[in-house]
Image (tube, rainbow, N blue to C red; front, side, top):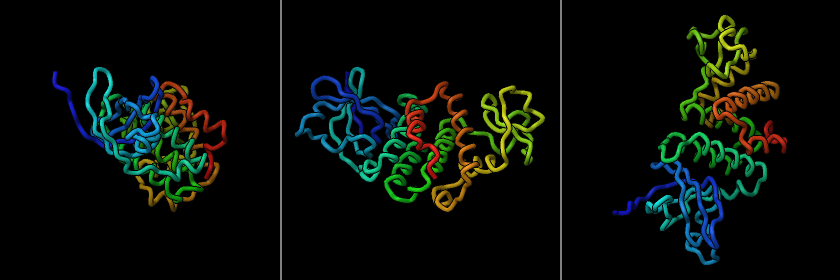
Length: 257
Protein backbone atom coordinates (compact mmCIF):
# COMPACT_ATOMS: atom_id res chain seq x y z
CA UNK A 1 0.00 0.00 0.00
CA UNK A 2 1.42 3.39 -1.03
CA UNK A 3 1.83 5.88 1.81
CA UNK A 4 0.27 9.31 1.39
CA UNK A 5 2.69 12.23 1.73
CA UNK A 6 1.48 15.82 1.89
CA UNK A 7 2.37 19.31 3.08
CA UNK A 8 0.21 21.80 4.94
CA UNK A 9 0.28 24.64 7.44
CA UNK A 10 -1.25 24.27 10.87
CA UNK A 11 -1.65 25.55 14.43
CA UNK A 12 -0.75 23.29 17.34
CA UNK A 13 -3.85 22.85 19.54
CA UNK A 14 -2.72 20.17 21.97
CA UNK A 15 0.37 18.10 22.88
CA UNK A 16 0.44 14.83 24.82
CA UNK A 17 3.55 12.85 25.77
CA UNK A 18 3.76 9.26 24.57
CA UNK A 19 6.57 6.78 25.12
CA UNK A 20 10.04 8.00 26.05
CA UNK A 21 10.49 10.79 23.54
CA UNK A 22 7.42 11.19 21.32
CA UNK A 23 4.36 13.41 21.45
CA UNK A 24 0.87 13.13 20.00
CA UNK A 25 -0.12 16.51 18.57
CA UNK A 26 -3.58 17.75 17.69
CA UNK A 27 -3.13 20.23 14.85
CA UNK A 28 -5.69 22.44 13.13
CA UNK A 29 -4.52 22.62 9.52
CA UNK A 30 -5.53 24.90 6.70
CA UNK A 31 -6.31 22.24 4.08
CA UNK A 32 -6.87 19.02 6.06
CA UNK A 33 -8.82 20.25 9.08
CA UNK A 34 -8.12 18.91 12.56
CA UNK A 35 -5.67 16.01 12.52
CA UNK A 36 -3.90 13.80 15.06
CA UNK A 37 -0.18 13.46 14.45
CA UNK A 38 2.89 11.89 16.00
CA UNK A 39 6.15 13.79 16.34
CA UNK A 40 8.83 11.17 16.88
CA UNK A 41 11.72 12.07 19.17
CA UNK A 42 10.43 15.60 19.75
CA UNK A 43 11.32 15.48 23.45
CA UNK A 44 15.01 14.82 22.81
CA UNK A 45 17.14 17.93 23.39
CA UNK A 46 18.62 17.77 19.89
CA UNK A 47 15.33 16.97 18.15
CA UNK A 48 14.91 18.54 14.71
CA UNK A 49 11.41 19.55 15.82
CA UNK A 50 12.64 21.57 18.82
CA UNK A 51 10.93 24.96 18.91
CA UNK A 52 8.89 24.34 15.76
CA UNK A 53 5.97 22.47 17.31
CA UNK A 54 5.30 24.28 20.57
CA UNK A 55 1.72 24.84 21.69
CA UNK A 56 -0.10 27.53 19.64
CA UNK A 57 2.73 27.68 17.08
CA UNK A 58 1.79 28.26 13.44
CA UNK A 59 4.01 25.91 11.44
CA UNK A 60 4.72 24.57 7.98
CA UNK A 61 4.45 20.76 8.03
CA UNK A 62 5.43 17.73 5.96
CA UNK A 63 3.47 14.60 6.89
CA UNK A 64 2.96 11.00 5.94
CA UNK A 65 -0.17 9.00 6.65
CA UNK A 66 0.47 6.21 9.18
CA UNK A 67 -1.73 3.33 10.33
CA UNK A 68 -3.71 5.37 12.84
CA UNK A 69 -1.94 8.76 12.97
CA UNK A 70 -0.23 11.14 10.61
CA UNK A 71 3.54 11.22 11.13
CA UNK A 72 5.38 14.55 10.97
CA UNK A 73 8.55 14.20 8.92
CA UNK A 74 9.57 17.87 8.73
CA UNK A 75 8.42 21.11 10.33
CA UNK A 76 9.26 24.79 10.16
CA UNK A 77 7.91 27.40 12.54
CA UNK A 78 6.24 30.37 10.86
CA UNK A 79 4.90 32.31 13.86
CA UNK A 80 5.41 31.37 17.52
CA UNK A 81 3.35 34.14 19.19
CA UNK A 82 5.82 34.51 22.06
CA UNK A 83 4.00 37.53 23.50
CA UNK A 84 1.00 35.32 24.29
CA UNK A 85 3.16 33.14 26.54
CA UNK A 86 4.45 36.20 28.39
CA UNK A 87 0.94 36.91 29.68
CA UNK A 88 -0.93 34.41 31.85
CA UNK A 89 -4.25 36.00 30.89
CA UNK A 90 -3.56 35.64 27.17
CA UNK A 91 -2.20 32.12 27.63
CA UNK A 92 -5.33 30.97 29.47
CA UNK A 93 -7.53 32.58 26.83
CA UNK A 94 -5.59 30.93 24.01
CA UNK A 95 -5.95 27.54 25.71
CA UNK A 96 -9.70 28.15 25.68
CA UNK A 97 -9.75 29.23 22.03
CA UNK A 98 -7.77 26.12 21.07
CA UNK A 99 -10.16 23.94 23.06
CA UNK A 100 -13.18 25.56 21.42
CA UNK A 101 -11.75 25.10 17.92
CA UNK A 102 -11.05 21.46 18.69
CA UNK A 103 -14.59 20.81 19.92
CA UNK A 104 -16.22 22.62 17.00
CA UNK A 105 -14.11 20.75 14.44
CA UNK A 106 -14.56 17.14 13.40
CA UNK A 107 -11.42 15.22 12.46
CA UNK A 108 -10.29 15.85 8.87
CA UNK A 109 -13.17 18.30 8.33
CA UNK A 110 -11.69 21.24 6.41
CA UNK A 111 -12.81 24.70 7.56
CA UNK A 112 -10.43 27.23 6.03
CA UNK A 113 -12.49 30.21 7.23
CA UNK A 114 -12.33 29.08 10.85
CA UNK A 115 -8.62 28.44 10.40
CA UNK A 116 -8.10 32.00 9.13
CA UNK A 117 -10.15 33.43 12.01
CA UNK A 118 -8.16 31.47 14.61
CA UNK A 119 -4.84 32.50 13.08
CA UNK A 120 -5.85 36.17 13.06
CA UNK A 121 -7.04 35.99 16.68
CA UNK A 122 -3.63 34.61 17.67
CA UNK A 123 -1.98 37.52 15.86
CA UNK A 124 -4.21 40.00 17.67
CA UNK A 125 -3.40 38.40 21.02
CA UNK A 126 0.31 38.49 20.18
CA UNK A 127 -0.03 42.22 19.55
CA UNK A 128 -1.21 44.70 22.16
CA UNK A 129 -4.38 45.67 20.29
CA UNK A 130 -6.81 44.04 22.72
CA UNK A 131 -4.89 44.06 26.01
CA UNK A 132 -7.76 45.94 27.68
CA UNK A 133 -10.53 44.23 25.71
CA UNK A 134 -9.86 40.53 26.14
CA UNK A 135 -13.45 39.65 27.02
CA UNK A 136 -14.70 41.47 23.91
CA UNK A 137 -12.18 39.58 21.80
CA UNK A 138 -13.38 36.36 23.41
CA UNK A 139 -17.02 37.11 22.56
CA UNK A 140 -16.03 38.06 19.01
CA UNK A 141 -14.20 34.77 18.51
CA UNK A 142 -16.98 32.68 20.06
CA UNK A 143 -19.73 34.17 17.90
CA UNK A 144 -17.63 34.04 14.71
CA UNK A 145 -16.45 30.47 15.41
CA UNK A 146 -20.04 29.32 15.97
CA UNK A 147 -21.12 30.98 12.73
CA UNK A 148 -18.29 29.43 10.70
CA UNK A 149 -18.97 26.01 12.23
CA UNK A 150 -22.62 25.95 11.17
CA UNK A 151 -24.20 27.36 14.34
CA UNK A 152 -24.99 30.99 13.53
CA UNK A 153 -26.81 32.96 16.21
CA UNK A 154 -30.05 34.26 14.67
CA UNK A 155 -30.04 37.98 15.51
CA UNK A 156 -31.90 39.81 12.72
CA UNK A 157 -35.10 37.82 12.20
CA UNK A 158 -37.06 35.84 14.75
CA UNK A 159 -35.55 32.36 15.01
CA UNK A 160 -39.08 30.92 15.12
CA UNK A 161 -41.45 32.84 12.83
CA UNK A 162 -38.85 34.59 10.67
CA UNK A 163 -40.28 38.09 11.10
CA UNK A 164 -37.89 41.02 11.41
CA UNK A 165 -37.08 41.64 15.06
CA UNK A 166 -38.36 44.82 16.68
CA UNK A 167 -36.69 46.53 19.67
CA UNK A 168 -37.67 46.12 23.32
CA UNK A 169 -39.54 42.79 23.40
CA UNK A 170 -37.12 40.05 22.43
CA UNK A 171 -36.02 36.78 24.01
CA UNK A 172 -33.21 34.30 23.50
CA UNK A 173 -33.81 30.62 22.78
CA UNK A 174 -30.95 28.14 22.74
CA UNK A 175 -33.21 25.48 21.26
CA UNK A 176 -34.30 27.69 18.35
CA UNK A 177 -30.81 29.06 17.79
CA UNK A 178 -31.10 32.74 18.58
CA UNK A 179 -33.36 35.69 19.27
CA UNK A 180 -37.14 35.24 19.16
CA UNK A 181 -39.91 37.83 19.24
CA UNK A 182 -42.32 38.13 22.16
CA UNK A 183 -45.06 36.35 20.16
CA UNK A 184 -42.86 33.26 19.78
CA UNK A 185 -41.31 33.08 23.24
CA UNK A 186 -43.82 30.35 24.15
CA UNK A 187 -42.19 28.10 21.52
CA UNK A 188 -39.41 27.58 24.04
CA UNK A 189 -40.35 27.68 27.71
CA UNK A 190 -36.66 28.14 28.58
CA UNK A 191 -36.29 31.33 26.53
CA UNK A 192 -35.39 34.44 28.51
CA UNK A 193 -35.63 38.20 28.05
CA UNK A 194 -32.90 40.07 26.22
CA UNK A 195 -31.83 43.71 26.42
CA UNK A 196 -31.73 45.63 23.14
CA UNK A 197 -28.05 46.48 23.71
CA UNK A 198 -27.20 42.78 23.88
CA UNK A 199 -28.96 42.12 20.56
CA UNK A 200 -27.02 45.01 19.01
CA UNK A 201 -23.71 43.67 20.32
CA UNK A 202 -24.44 40.15 19.07
CA UNK A 203 -25.08 41.61 15.61
CA UNK A 204 -21.82 43.55 15.72
CA UNK A 205 -19.84 40.50 16.81
CA UNK A 206 -21.24 38.46 13.95
CA UNK A 207 -20.61 40.87 11.06
CA UNK A 208 -17.86 43.34 11.99
CA UNK A 209 -14.08 42.90 11.82
CA UNK A 210 -11.12 43.37 14.16
CA UNK A 211 -10.58 47.01 13.19
CA UNK A 212 -14.15 47.89 14.15
CA UNK A 213 -13.80 45.92 17.38
CA UNK A 214 -10.74 47.93 18.45
CA UNK A 215 -12.82 51.13 18.45
CA UNK A 216 -15.94 49.63 20.01
CA UNK A 217 -16.96 50.71 23.51
CA UNK A 218 -19.30 48.45 25.48
CA UNK A 219 -20.72 48.93 28.96
CA UNK A 220 -19.76 46.35 31.55
CA UNK A 221 -23.42 45.46 32.05
CA UNK A 222 -23.94 44.72 28.34
CA UNK A 223 -20.65 42.82 28.12
CA UNK A 224 -21.54 40.55 31.05
CA UNK A 225 -25.05 39.84 29.79
CA UNK A 226 -23.75 39.10 26.28
CA UNK A 227 -21.15 36.75 27.72
CA UNK A 228 -23.90 34.91 29.61
CA UNK A 229 -25.97 34.51 26.44
CA UNK A 230 -23.02 33.18 24.44
CA UNK A 231 -21.98 30.83 27.25
CA UNK A 232 -25.48 29.35 27.47
CA UNK A 233 -25.69 28.88 23.71
CA UNK A 234 -22.26 27.26 23.55
CA UNK A 235 -23.26 24.88 26.34
CA UNK A 236 -26.35 23.93 24.33
CA UNK A 237 -24.38 23.39 21.11
CA UNK A 238 -21.51 21.46 22.72
CA UNK A 239 -23.76 19.74 25.28
CA UNK A 240 -21.34 20.66 28.06
CA UNK A 241 -19.20 23.42 29.53
CA UNK A 242 -15.59 23.30 28.40
CA UNK A 243 -13.11 22.83 31.25
CA UNK A 244 -11.00 25.64 29.78
CA UNK A 245 -13.98 28.01 29.95
CA UNK A 246 -14.71 27.10 33.56
CA UNK A 247 -11.04 27.66 34.37
CA UNK A 248 -11.23 31.17 32.92
CA UNK A 249 -14.19 31.96 35.12
CA UNK A 250 -12.48 30.63 38.23
CA UNK A 251 -9.57 32.93 37.47
CA UNK A 252 -12.00 35.84 37.02
CA UNK A 253 -10.72 36.51 33.53
CA UNK A 254 -13.97 36.19 31.64
CA UNK A 255 -15.02 39.84 31.93
CA UNK A 256 -11.76 41.72 31.42
CA UNK A 257 -12.49 44.77 29.27
